[in-house]
Length: 228
Image 1 (cartoon, rainbow, N blue to C red):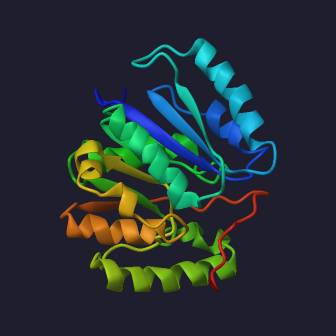
Image 2: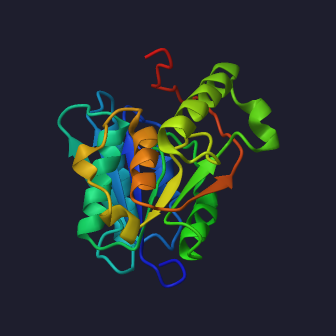
């Protein structure tokens, strides 16, 4: 638990063999449950999830018997579909705080507490990372920086959250009360998920907080097609 709140982490993973295992291994000890959603991967992602889940679950002691819950989609639904699956499980398990971390290692687990804090403090029902207001944005590949800024402006117009940017940042945390206000089944399932989610949150009168953090890139490959 984090400050007397149960915490879940949804980890969407599509062809993240070689990365997702480290994400599981590095989950902070205050996490009560992690939903590892293999979104129809065609590599060894599912096997890697199973092996690392077994290791973490063998030593886990907490609110739930198992820390890691492996979930597999029979076909690829998109990152939004994977997050929706995790959100639904967290809601059913009555988790108080649900975070999202990518399966590619771009979201350092040691920053999770920083993402959770605005929600626990009651300043927001939804918190998200922002890589565009940090000095280290120079480390972001140029096409990603330009693409993110364009999508930021369009999302401001669509959502009404004029103070929010970096909408494609998937490092997030949401309170159970905010999650229950959303019709999860209606949300877009591909990379537009994070953008539509902001629109729906504003319609539900949910306050949003942003948490600056530096971009982290390694050998992983982005599946986003900006032209699409």
